[in-house]
Image (cartoon, rainbow, N blue to C red):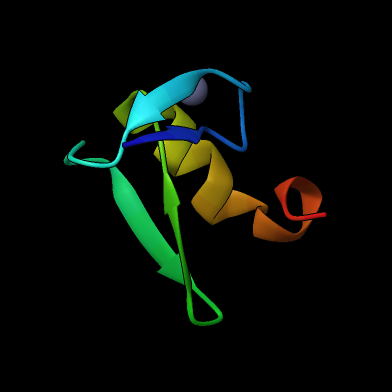
Length: 47
Ligand SMILES: [Zn+2]
């Protein structure tokens, strides 16, 4: 299933190893960089 990377806006597969659960919701990322960026400032990316 395709899902949007909240940091860069790219579509990623939900089978990606780059995922992170924040406040009960799981977010998926295209790369470790996007995941690290999200972890630093999650509130900036969840709208
Ligand atoms: Zn990304």
